[in-house]
Length: 480
Image 1 (cartoon, helix red, strand yellow):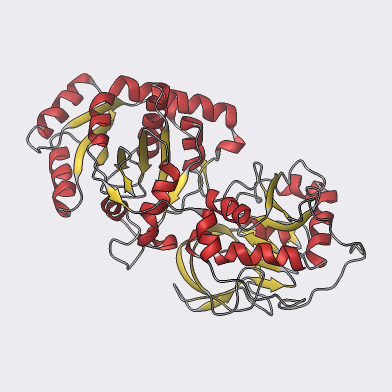
Image 2 (spheres, rainbow, N blue to C red):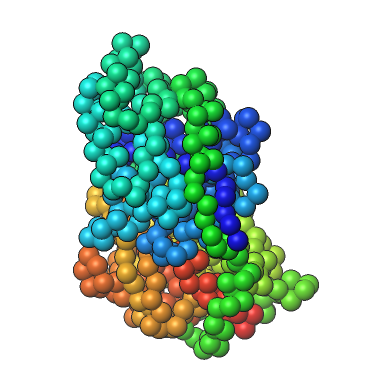
């Protein structure tokens, strides 16, 4: 199979240069022309893809060479871009910044090379003039395999400033494809973990994306950018397919009735069996809404391919789990921002506890771990795990190599996966009697909890790297 979707990678010398504004604006501007635009984000970021969805009307996809492996970048790209006229890939950090101590691994430059895609460099020109040429020359010549094919100048102060920048770049050999003036209306609010997700400010986010699109339309040469995208090299290979990878993954070992440390059963433990859907499939409930916005689209696709019916619910609003729930997935997000509201929804907290103590499989990552705790910043949570969670001044951030320490609903002990941590909270204790993961760096430690069917951890993982995780989880839904 030959992949020939026109594509661009939007990169920058450093974070804060305006990649998200330019990439999202380009996506929206091209979509308004009637093109089917496929949005992608390099790295583990969950928030930017939410803005990409508003811009394109399509699911935002992450391309992370650390979490998924370099061999999956092109197949995952092709899966997301299938049937599209154009793909826009937003980079991460600076163009050549990757996983710490791993060279180019997981950098925007590496992904651009794997996709054979031209790079457009977004440069914050607010405090420079002729020096911009030296900066662009350095980035364009650093790695001859990376094709820096154009520059978009951001935060330009005046017509005279633009003129000086263009004159300097005439000598660099890299064409200027856009020039954007300072514009407060495209700013997006941020807090302790980055931009505020779309789900928390949808109306304002729609306006912001519209402003980004208008700024890009006024300041960029869209025809030249599309022509550049059409010059991307062809890729060979098949698109990633959830059904195929689940079918080819090893059959999961049968789970034992109790996994890890047993937990006390609360008085409200249900005595009746959980219902199944009419066709025999189990419903896997996936937490969503404003408090739980971090999720990779491939997870739901893998669960569906493994035989589950995936139903989203909102822990801020829904007082019961979806009918027929046989398993629960609670991903990342910002429960610390909504702790009072989550705590106030006592019926749902009890329903989650009942499901967990009945032995159903529950996969909780980061925010999910906090929600399952006894309390979060003094607010009662579900009480599934006997841990206390609180906000911290310290940011925990980085990629992790991990190995499953305990058999669980997700993996057998010894399963190796790569993950990512990104939080300003702590839980005490940090690991249970049966920990979820052994982590090698930055220090050797165990973390997380395996308790009956619960697997809870701070580690965000991408199941495309281990599709057997979804298959095992759904199988546990059938047998628990």
